[in-house]
Amino acid sequence: MHRLYQPVLDILQQASRDIVMPYYQNLQSHQIDEKAPGDLVTVADKLSEEYIEGALAALLPEAKMVGEEAFAADAAVLDQLADGQVWIIDPIDGTGNYASGQPPFGILIALAEADETVAGWLYDPLTARICHAVKKGGAFINGQCIAVPEDHPDRPVAALATGFMTDEQREALLTAAEPRYDIVDIPRCAAEQYPRLVTGANHVSVFERTLPWDHAAGILFLNEAGGKCARWDGSPYRPADRRKGLLGASSPKLWDEAAEQLGDIFTI
Image (cartoon, rainbow, N blue to C red; front, side, top):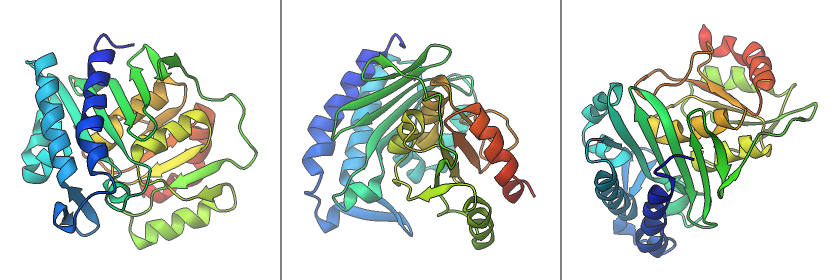
């Protein structure tokens, strides 16, 4: 595990205990705003990010910060991702679920160096589950090493995030996927979706929007567990890359099959 595994986990647990959970199912209408149509932010998101940034700065004073809510205020923060050490923070992932008083939701933290994710933490405040990964060091759930299942069903389970696709892409994807996969609802929470791929609850996921606070930690977790998440052309995900489109799968074989069956939709 990463040398900062426990200090970062301590930060996640305190943010959950002192901020996220006290507001859960207790938000007032004036404490929920809309950054864009369908894109919510709550007072808890803002307070959680503020606390996490301050605590992480004490761990690595030289590291820069890129948080979801900081980006909402100033999109130029993404320019910091290209080099150096950067903390990438999603103070509440799955805010739509959280604001409606429903699971799942989580807190995501990734550490990037020279535009490569080197460590990730995915924390579930409701269950206290911590998923962690370190570059070339493995994946862990609650401190125990984890690997993706070796066996997969003849009809893999696919969770397809189509909300940010065009109507044409969405229709083409569903038409291509339905004969080959059992399609299930997405959890609308990357902190839950990536663990589902690692544990085999889901086998394939497609994402159109690929913002770093949503994906950097989870992609590393999936890849280090033996699965695969990459761009449609097979190139690795890098936090500063602003392209759209990702394909994740519970094994490289499933990834290759999905890329062949579905990839033309997104590479035209």
